[in-house]
Amino acid sequence: MKVIIGGKPAPPAPKVETLCIDEDASGQRVDNFLIRHLKGVPKTHIYRLIRSGEVRVNKGRVSADTRLSTGDMLRVPPVRISERVAEKEQAMAQQVAHGAPARDFPVLLEDDHLIAINKPAGVAVHGGSGVSFGVIEQLRMARPQAKFLELVHRLDRETSGILLVAKKRSALKQLQDQFRTRQTGKTYLAMVCGQWPAKLKVLDKPLHKYLLDGNEAQAGERRVKVVSRDDPDGMPSVTLVKIRASSADYSLLEVTIKTGRTHQIRVHLASEGFPILGDDKYGDFEHNKQLARASAQHQLKRMFLHAWRLQLHHPASGEPIELLADLPPELAFFSAAVLAQRPD
Image 1 (tube, helix red, strand yellow):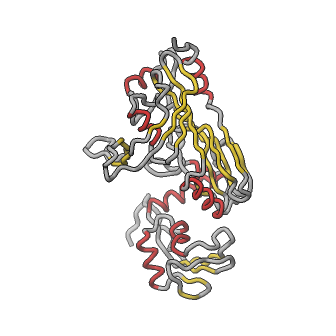
Image 2: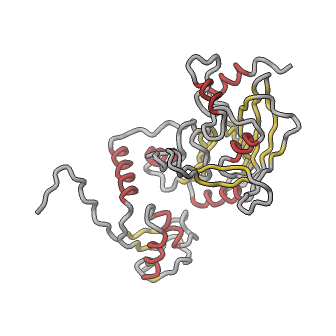
Image 3: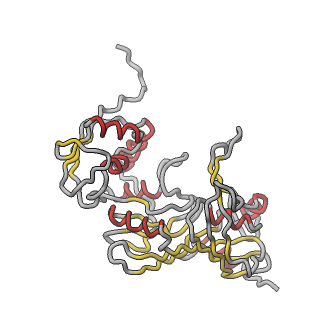
């Protein structure tokens, strides 16, 4: 028998699972439940398992669109997950076992249905793209007793501010419906170089998402650009802009998005010749370098974009809620310094 010293131990053989469906999963389709439960398993494989009859509810065969009910016993057959997902889960388990504390995210609101946190800049909302753990993974590690924690929406890694996490599946669906049907009000604070034109209040250029090509390090990264109104790939996008304060050199803007496109605010402002300070994808790179230098009169080492206000209805009671997250200290300090000089 060949023995490899230092080799990775063989992963444990997968076993049959029998899950009791709780009220949060009640009403969900079998395929959607399994896609969430079997993270890392290709959807094609999940549908193959259902068709083969290996997935059963209360010992009976089911179809992909079978709806689950509270108390159902769901048989999940042995499934091997991808090596990457297995390593990530093992790393998370090790961190929990060693008592590694999750990052302390300031909580703006929490009840039985949702958590609203004030996300710091530089923290991804979820793992992936070279990031081992994001906000949602750290929350799950900190709250191992929580049966359900899922992101309601996303923020860019370098954007700070209000982020919602659902604690019940019913709350997740209700809140995501609000976002999809534009019943929420999302306003950001952004600072740009120069004096924003007071008459420019509505930005509605269509946006198109694409991947960078070529052999450079950034190849494969996601980018967004403005396209013409007759472009078949253009997605309708609406951004409202209000000047909050300005100086001779800078403008602090309240930016409300009516659509939730990837990098929408960053691309819309840059397309008007006013990129957000510190934006490493669509910004003025030379100016960003000057602001980040230790010798800079007013130093800024991050993107000046902050999810400041979120208006929504509570997923259970329907009560209107307004959440506010003040500017983090580094942005508040920079803003106070550069806006001290009023425009002529």
